[in-house]
Image (cartoon, rainbow, N blue to C red):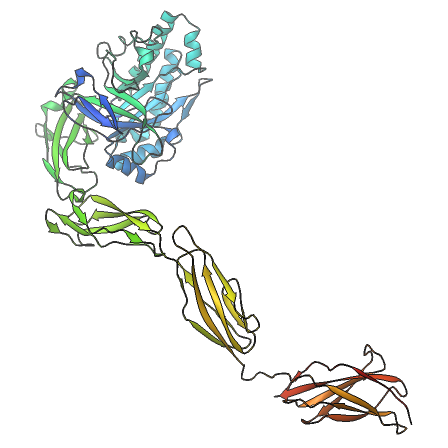
Length: 620
């Protein structure tokens, strides 16, 4: 990527419309190579000297969707110090300018996280006039965020297949098209410069390098052959063979960084403070006195010491006369600060400061043990030692956990507190446990007709229940006992096996007692015989067996075998076993049955009726 620096701030721009974030930074002086995500990238020989400092950044657009503030903080903590954010694009099938729907929130959140912000715009300009209109549109989008933009503003020129710029280019002779589209790029960047930003041109090697592709489309001698504008080169390889000058190298679109889901673009910035220039009509910041603290305490977050700039006796104002870019300013070590002149001032001053302090990432953590699944979140009691000093939990550090309940690998995170910052993570294994079923009691006693919840719990799978005697007590699928009749039973509670535990069982006792105020029906009496008295009155005598616990009997008789229109006769008193009755059906054959009842407190409980007997009634 190339930078398009605005007076006072350095914005980095993203080239591809599918641009992804650049991952962790690998700063350093005179580096021969850098290893990113396990891939070793060799820096061009011309950028390996001590004059160059290498910073890493990223570029984002709609295609990274909604990056939250927390994720932007993670990106900064991962070592990303700058980002190019797409502000918009021109439609592929017509000259219409469009705003990237995530532009505003990306700028605001990246800035808040301490990531230096640059801008890029996907161009489809086919004429210089269109390029100027695109630049004007970019300027209109950036006005609200001018103070937040500390990196260049870039033109992203890529000539995608089937797009309007590509169709126009292919409709012309190669030499005429190359001349026209190079002029378009120059017009865009000249306009951006006029709006007070540092312009940057982005494209890939196949479009700019005649030695690599005879069908190249851009004449780079007019763009940065004499250092006119900065260049951001895309070449996805482990080394860079482009012979021309460039300031940013987008070396992969398959990188990864904490805070970004999926792959992302990653870039190197070859910063050379000696190459920064003083603009005509401005005062060089190098001629001013720039002071700042040479050390700061490590906090685990971005560290930004105050900067003071004086031009003689005049104290300059940040945001009006200069801007400050902090690099590598989270981890312990050397942080870099670029103080860039804006307004009436220009050029850069490069400063550094040391971040020192108690970083728990250097602490020793012991006492982490593998555990067995219990059904609850599992914790640890580690010993944390920093420089031979044993630290205290909740005083010097806190403990948090990830995945610390189910079987598998869990993580305990030791995070610094108060005088300590940073964090260190340790893992431990949670193994499969032995299933178990627990209940509040081993014995449940209840009266007939009542219910009780077993209250069973398990660290295993689904619970099921089974009663040993469903006449005494039943149990529902949710573990509710219902007492039916006096007696003893047991309930077996089973817990199914799961990915965390084996299966398990528990048996509890159930004692059902007779309800104290329960009125029980007596036994069924037996109708022994029917006697026709033959006294001219159609009377008969019913004789039955006496049952215990009764309060009386009910004799029921009818002239119909189905007991239709039956007559009931109640006999009160216990120890009664016969009754003489005058039939209301005269000489008709009658059918008779009897039952007993018990009575208490005005309530009656009846037995079932006995079997029927029949009798033919005669007067004499």
